[in-house]
Image (cartoon, rainbow, N blue to C red):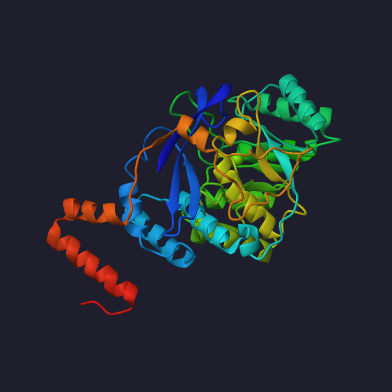
Length: 410
Ligand SMILES: [Mg+2]
């Protein structure tokens, strides 16, 4: 495991953490290597060094297992989560290995066909109407035909002003989405506005009049009744669902209750690629739509890109493309990837590599990453002896060996 701190070219102020000057793209990276030397990679966004010891939880569960056996890997990750530590971010690494061994993209493993993907420019900072219009014009010139705005004002008149004026300026040539980031409110640094159903309904009406294509996360993520009421009320599609770490069971319930019109589960959080693919399928069955959240880092983007291509929704929906220059740009977002996912006129050529489709920039990883944990079969023996004692370690080992050989153990 590596802790990566890649500097941003300029300070970035994410609307979802008011008051936070973000100067780094920070994440934890896991590299899982098979006996034959095939590497699988995955990453989870980090605030600080909170995952540094997590290898001690993950490694004993997965070392010695078959990484291509996704149901078993899902079960191991589920077992790790029982005491509250959820590690779905690790799961794409197993798919990466599976794809590399089969020389196929994950999209193909899921039965899909690699394809060019339409993107929407996902802004991150809050801006006033004049700056927002300028920004949207810049994205339009670059080829984007869809953009997502952020609203985050205490006074809803400011939010309305931004959306109405931006829609008036560019609405005839660009599709517009609006993200209120109310699902997981963060008020740890500066205070953050808190919407209720009445404000969400008023704002949905404004969005409808302005011709907005979707309204994202207008209410807390677990206010299921209010979300379902709002989705039924609003003529503008309501979207959300990005960080439901309960995965498939939680999102299945929300799909059945029609909490959103467009579901945006992010595989990094919502049960990995396997559960998120099923969630996309359920959306189709229920006549709802799917397009994943991707705003973590290049590794998360890669995993959700594969899902989008395989989902069957890529004809109708654009995929989120996090972009907010000068701070949040592809080179920093996709730090330590050899070839960042750079758009071509608002679309993305599907990566040609197997698995997750990227290669690691080893020099960049050395520069920005610090290895914080390493474990292999040999080290695991030593660790178990030190950590559990000889007798317990021997018993555990005997059960594992017996199980792998298919013999029953006492
Ligand atoms: Mg969002």
